[in-house]
Image (cartoon, rainbow, N blue to C red):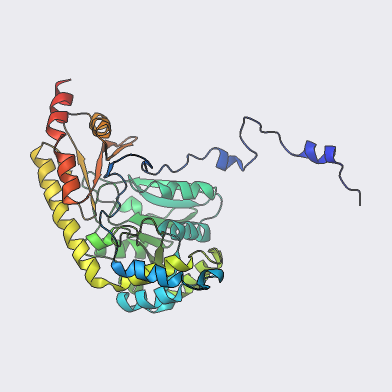
Length: 374
């Protein structure tokens, strides 16, 4: 066999100096997911990325220290995160083999899309909602079929309609950016009607009155995903999980990275989910502040969507939403201005501490007056 000369090899590689590297065409054309601003310097009040404003359970630090002691980190972690699955299964009323763990719920969502949706096939999602779903479909070379929410944030029959190539449907519940929830009974009927699995993304479910974990037993097509970033104050750690029938979990396990959860995150997540009293206290604090924030915004003339999450979605009939966002940013306060084509724009405000919310509300009257007059 003739070996290629250096010049032959070089000529076979497309040149891309200053241009697009020779990736797949659908990747080159892909609009990347853009997360909320994460400033690394200065003093900011961050109410833009739905982080928990409080420190996690003290048990988390203790678990991390223990997991990092001795030669523990010299060895590979448990590939199935057995300690977490065991504790989570006990609390959720399932068996450990009904749970798949991931490096944040985004990792779990990636595994799901890779497992079910092939090139040229379709993923369905509501609009507006979490735009990462669209990005994940694009990475697969798949189509994204978006069904627009009604004005009351409900979904009609088109959301459950059969479609050629439809392989997965994803719905966040509570939804972002609206903080609204779809009724559990409606979701169960939707799952039964759909020709493919229904993923219910419950990243914010701990702040709502209900959740859909029990639907996994009632319908084999239901998959529920959860995150420890929000209600457990572990956004910096990265840990999430899915709950589904064991036969589904077995297939998803083939797709995940061998060690997608490190030893520290497994130990911390296990300690966090076990501290149920911490969760109850934190949840109560955030819900109380959320209600106060909603009332204050309404008194300032905002149209406020009642929230079931740790953030509030609102619009103002007179002032520029982008102008409000920019004026607050100048004062070191970050909120999220979100603009959805063919839908409109608005403001999503994370529930911070009471002190942070006071600091956010204080300049709003002056900002609104100035913007309304301009």
